[in-house]
Image 1 (spheres, helix red, strand yellow):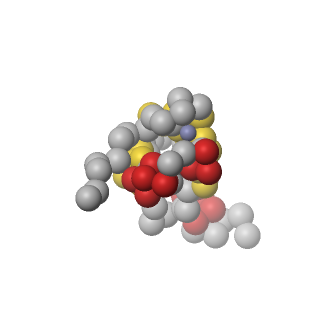
Image 2: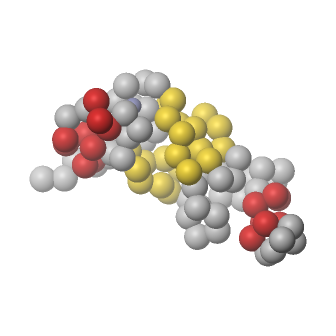
Length: 85
Ligand SMILES: [Zn+2]
């Protein structure tokens, strides 16, 4: 029995972290985003999982990252290519 995970709205996204509005508790949870391979649709256990029933932890939620929005991913791209190290 697998329920389709609800979609959380992305509040803020800076290339390494995304803050989303939790569809379960309606608070904002931050998730660390891996650079590069982890763009697009994300599936996470809710940040409030320890206060939720087990089914909620298993189902979690999804959110969609803005893939290549100009201005927000420039720093990420530079870092990935090793410009700063
Ligand atoms: Zn929550």
